[in-house]
Image 1 (cartoon, rainbow, N blue to C red):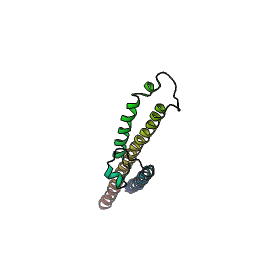
Image 2: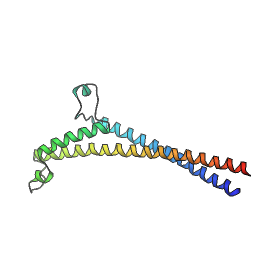
Image 3: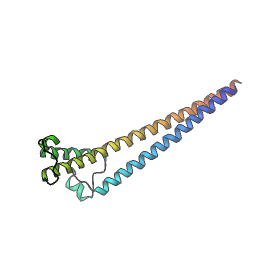
Image 4: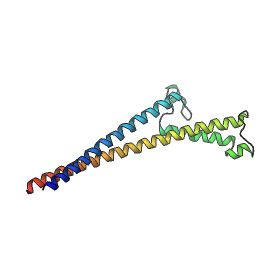
Length: 155
């Protein structure tokens, strides 16, 4: 019966570690998501928002708004030139050319917003992983405790 007792202790320890690591995942996810929202609020991007939203002080600070704004900017950028190669026309990038400069600035802003969408997606995934780890940890602790109780009643 000593082996059953040791096994239940190991299972319960693994469950406890899973709960702790899951909690850390959730805390880190929330922290990074809040950091991204605050960073985006500082930029005060309002592309794609209605006049009422802008008057209320609303800015692009969620994945949905960032996706919509990036899609709008992509449309504007493609109106300048369908592709980067088309923009250059076989030549080199010229930062003194307003068309080239506008295209580059639009591309930069578009990428910034798409990276924000990706970042929010990653934090959501990590949060989900943390929740799953906590559930598994609780299940392992419960199973370990149940096995321990059964082993005591058998002996």
